[in-house]
Length: 342
Image (cartoon, rainbow, N blue to C red; front, side):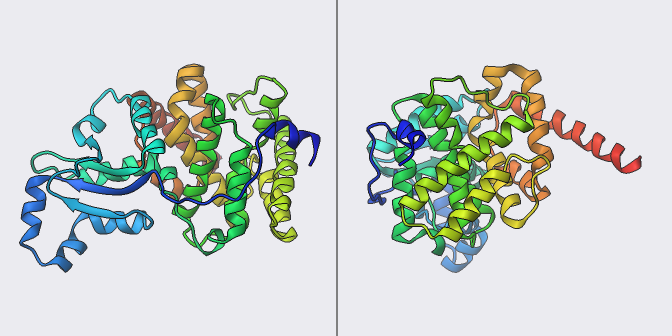
């Protein structure tokens, strides 16, 4: 084990890990009037015509249920509270964190004749998809579970920065699978380790910039350092050498702007950007202010595919960030048109 890896791990060890129970055991949609009206319809027609079908397709690992009233021990999120403005996403993060210690059902509760209950559930599951992770054939093997253990061991979850980095890496992995359900092993591993070099910076007790003004030379150096660390962990977990080499390549190239547009490189760039918008855009804005946030949003939009930008419609953004995003999108569009005309 290298000195850098030992410094990050400290006293933590790498042990095989598996999900005995995911924090979100299932998601229920609860609206008494809706459930009552559905009860008299043909079950096949209900499945095809209601939001449940679309949610099942988008989140295939989640057990879904339509219910008149929430389960007694469920964590209930009223739709009105989630959609209220201004939205305190930090409060919801604290509420959802209780599921880590006590896994249970999550129930999204609507009122009256709401026709947005499915959209609300999608927004909530998008922000917290890491709590009910999906896998595919490439990530269902024992070696991948061992990688997840090694990946977790790299993060000191007692620190807010460690928890944030861990959540972002898991969320990026989940975005990869949402965007490309048949994604291969290398890009899934790259998603988990794509910013692992920041852990080295923290281990050296060095403040780590978070991309207000990206320095290409510095970004490339960080990416190379992260690729080396990821390779060591993956080799220790028994991942084959060609896959390790491909992971290192993807990590090394993922900071490029515009991104390298191979299939997996573009997928990783899209997943990384969507995770930032979903999980950390509010933190970034609070820390750096509106001017730096505008630059950051434009930087991300320039890296994203049109399909990924479309996905932002299902991401719950704070009201001030939504305004900045619209502003950044218009500026990016003007610049694109000007380049095309010239």
